Image 1 (cartoon, helix red, strand yellow):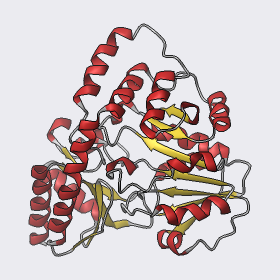
Image 2 (image 1 turned 30 degrees about the vertical axis):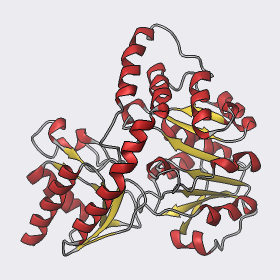
Image 3 (image 1 turned 90 degrees about the vertical axis):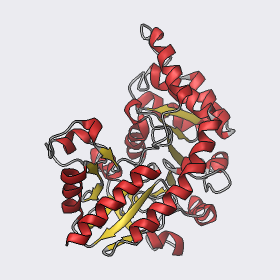
Image 4 (image 1 turned 30 degrees about the horizontal axis):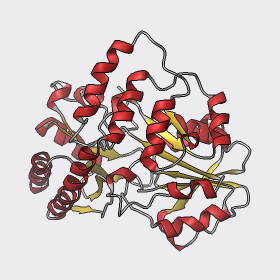
Length: 350
């Protein structure tokens, strides 16, 4: 089986060891370990009775729920089959431009979507976004991942606003923004009505631990929404995913529980990793940590799998990082401790 581009591929991991998927502790996918919310599971169970009906391709209830969650009109919202579907339409949206500027390193699906339509792209170093981009912007789109994957870097909203006036198209991937408490978020959603060149990408699957259902949504000008609806297949979001998304966004208790869990768990995990000689964890505002490693990441990944049934994310799909880095999700305190203990034992033997 080919080495996966994304995290969370347990089928691939268990081909390397003799165990079941359920025996592997998965740190490779940045999914909330506290979910899915009970309210969402209940909605899915009730929704099974409706499987003999097609979903409404306009998803009015789901769009209304998203609109209420963000205090915007539903016409500015497009539910999608995960964020990945939106990246495809964003790539086609940029086909009449001279190219797209991507962060370096960046999520592999950005390049996948652009390559589908032969859209040229260039990379910019992360620090340049704060200092100021030096590339021509006249007919080029800008894509920003905030918080950034895989580093977890968060850009201040004030840093991003000037680019809305410089670029003809600005895409902000906020797939991990939900993991920050509301008073710390740097979302541009409240500016959406002021800039018709702005597209915001959001994910429900990560924060609410629903990756198997593939639920995301885009927020942009209604004219662009109508255009994308004509491009894509009908019923791209299934009924159970729509119901799950509606309930998840209403579950304020689950949201509060996640915010209370993440910061202390992330800080402790980072501190524990920093205590291991040979590791250098980077600061993160997301639910994952990028770690510089003196042991090649694919070697460390294999040893953790074989000895401890723990899966971490190597960074081979990020060419700028390669074997020098790995990424781990923040999980429960017990699981995080198991990870750091296992890595420490491997490093002590080297």
